[in-house]
Length: 147
Image (cartoon, rainbow, N blue to C red):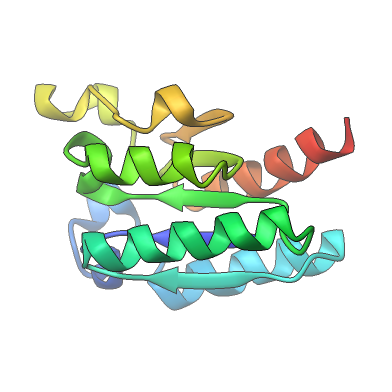
């Protein structure tokens, strides 16, 4: 299981806590690790502010999925959700089962956040539940692999 986080998520806990909550990125990682441990899954948790690095990681994840070593990806692409066709193409091209996750509800925010380039290639989208969204995304991805 891979959990990737995009730009500015390294600022969690300090950046607009009324929107994103008080949990830090380290808190999110610990929370995700508790869920994956509970499910008996290995987890790779990463954050990058670089679009190219995220794309490379998606490619690596695709190789891991193809080898049977990973279920797929929980992806909070941050602002790249709304801007990156390249990240969308990476998810699709690498054939990575992906759940898109957002701490806030993008549809309740600025209009430019209402469109996601990732939703069309994702298995599902979890948004607006804060850190709980990661739990739901991990469990949802794991559940799709059981069916």
